[in-house]
Structure formats: C-alpha cells, structure tokens
Length: 312
Image 1: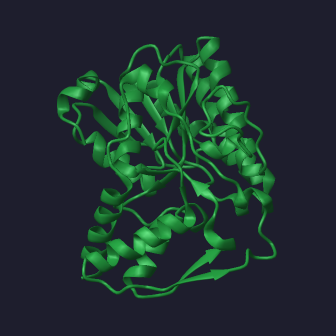
Image 2: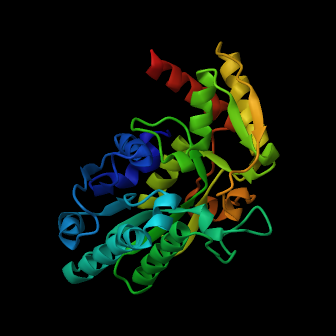
C-alpha cells in the first residue's frame, strides 16, 4: 500500500463499506485504516431500502461490494441475483435523491461483463456482451449507477475487476472466482492440480493490494464520475503458465512440487469458461494515476507466504 499522502483526500470524510467481511471487502477495510477517514460498515440486508438509510445520510464515500459473487448461484436463482445486485443500487440512489445527498459511490463490478471480448486486451470502449446472468446483472447495476450519476443523484464509479488473487483477512472468494488462490493452496498441500483442456485459456490476474489501491483512489479522485474502469494487470497469461508458476513458487519456498494433470473440460462447463481475456488499464491510469505494481511472481510469493503462515 502507498503512503498516507496518496489518500489525503479522505481526511475528514465519512466512508461506508458494504461487504466488509468478504474477500475483497476485508482487504479494503484494512487499506482504509491507512487513511484519515471515519469508517463505518453497513450491516443488514442490502436488498432492503431501510438498510441504506444511515449510510446515505452520513456518507461522503460509499464502497459497495456486497451482493452475489457466484455465477452458478445467479444461474440457479436469477431473481435472487437481480435483487442482490441491482436492487441495492436502486435503493441507494433513490435515497440519495430524497435526502439531497451526493456521495461518491464506488461499485465492484466485473470484467467478465465483456463476454467474448475481441480484440484483446479489451478496453472500456468495447461493448459489453454478458454471457451469464451474473454478468448481465452486474452490467445492469453499472448502467443504473451511470444513469444516476448523469442525473446528479450520486457521484458514481464502477470498477470492472479482472481475476483478483492474493491474501485477505477473510475467507477466500467464491471458489469459481478464486482459482489461483485455490490452486496455490492445493500446491502447498502437495495435491495434484487439474488443468482443463490443455490450459490454453488466457486470464488477467491482478493482485489484491493493487485492487484495493484502485478503490481507494477512485473514492476521492475528482472527475471520475460516470465511466466504468478496468482494474487488471494489463497482461494475459495462460492457465498452464499460471498453474506452473504456482507450483514452482511453492517449491522455491521449500514446499512440495505438485503434479499438474491435464483433464477434459467438465461436461457442464459453459463456453464462457473457455474464453480468453486480458484488459487495458489506460483509462484508470489517466483518471487517477493508478497502475498495477505487483508482478505475478511477487504476488504468488506473497500468497504462498500468507498461506504457510495461516497453516502454522
């Protein structure tokens, strides 16, 4: 994390965080401790309008990270996904309008809203084509936030997160969205890693501390209202490369050297699971000076050290 001076804009501000006990939320909460903000955690059901009242009435900045994080759950219960992803922002923005408040709202979206992006790396001018219910609802939530910002109800920023990895104080993220963390933990236990379809698919992995810094900068940097921003490393690596790197870094740290077994894609896997993706981050860099700082090898080394300390 950077020095306090980078986040001096938080001095005297009141910041509310939803999803503060989750994988990303707990890391963000820790990052906020380096600022001079007064920090509050939103408790309760974010689908209920009354839950939002204290935050809207008392906030300068709201980081909204709560809601469904599972693609599978969204597919099984689309109505529940809609209510947990879109409805909270509707409540937030309508209450802000009614109370004549104008908070900065930073929303955790996902880079998977792009669907089968082409060309790569994708920038924010690429038209989102969500392939899953989960991604569709994230995009709808982005659109509502952008609409509310255009109409002066809030000062909204949506961050489209690529594949976030790295240690956090909370439990791991949803298994379907924490592959690198899970594979590194398996490698530390000496378990074989299952690599689907030859491991040729490309992903963009961004370290959690870099993601937290993107949120913190987005919370106080003027002029960021409206657009969505990619938060990524800017570089794609294949699944084979990242699995091999995890195994190598565990071995370099004195752990076992796990085998990697190629296996077919599961029969119930979707085409979107086999997509390639990487993202450009120029828009966020120009807007607030952010850029990823933690290389993949360094990030995995930090993750290995964290997991080993937790196992002691």
